[in-house]
Image 1 (cartoon, one colour):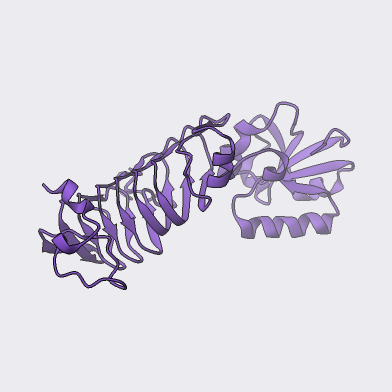
Image 2 (cartoon, one colour):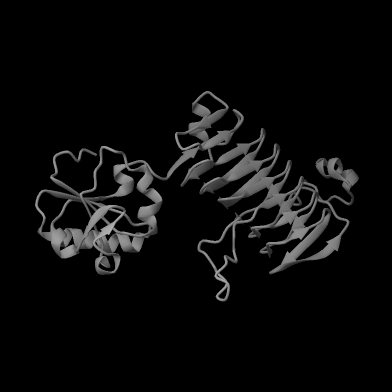
Amino acid sequence: MELSQYQYIVGYGIGQYYDYVKARIPEKIRLDYLSDMKWEQIGDQYDGIEVISPGRLKELENVFVIVFSGNPRNYQSISSMMVRFQLPFAHISQVVSLDYAISGKELRETGETSYCDGNGNRVVFTRDIEDSVLITFQGGNNLVQIGKSVSVGRLRISCGNSAICTIGEGTEIGEASIYVTGGKVLIGKECLFSQQIVLRNHDGHHIFDKNTGERMNPSGSISIGNHVWLCQGAVLLGNASIGDNSIVGTMAVTSTSFPEEVVIAGNPAKIIRRNVCCSKDNTDFYDRGSLGECMAKEAMRYFS
C-alpha cells in the first residue's frame, strides 16, 4: 500500500495489539500521531509519539489512518467512525504482513521438505503432506513438524510464539484444531483422531492470583503417546499427557497426565478402564472377536 502521498499517517488504537505488532512496522512507514478514544488516560505521548484526540484527528487534512485492533468488533466500530470522519483508513494487516497461513498444498508445491519465513517460523514435512493441512503463524520462532504418511481430513494448527508442534508418522486425523504458543504439542506415531478434536496448550487470556499478583495459568505442553485414539470432541489442554495405546473418550476434557493402555472419559477425565488397546479395523466393516483377528495390529508395537 502506497502511503507517501499523505502528509500525515496516524495510528488509531493504543493498547496491547499495537504493542504486539509495532516491531513489524517498516521504517519507511512513519507514524506522525497516535490516537485513541481513551486518549486522555494515555497522556501526551505514547511510545515516543504524540497522542491526539479523535476530534483533532478529524480536523487533519491529507491524512491516512492505520487501525491497530485485534478485536473484530472494535475494528468494526473504529471503521464506522473513520467513515463518519470521511478519512481513508486500513487495518495494519492490510499495510504490512502480520498473521498468515500456509497450506499443505502450498508447502508441497515449494518442492522442498522444509520451509522457513523471516520471523523464524519453520515447517518440516514430507512430500506426501495433505492439502487439508493449514498452518497459521501469528508470531515467530515456531516449529511445526509433520511426519510421513499422516492422513488428514481437516487439520488447523495455530502457532503463537516459540511453539513446537510435532505429529508422528502414520497418524490419522479426521478433523482437529491445535492451538500452541510458548510450549509444545507432541503427537506420537500411528495415532487416531476422530472429529472435532481440540488441543490447546494455553488459555486465551491471563489469570492472576489476587493476593500475590502471580500468573496462575501459564502455557503448558501437551504430550500424546504412540497409537492413541482420541474419540469425537475430545479436548486436551496444557499439561495433558496421554500414554501409549490409550483411548480418550468422546467429549472427554483433561489437563492432567495418564499412563499407557487406559481408557479415560468425562469432564474432567478419569480412568475408567486399564490394560486396553485398540485396532484401526473399522467396526462398520468388521466384527472382530480378538486382536489377533484384526488386520491393523499397530498397538502391539507399543505394548509395555
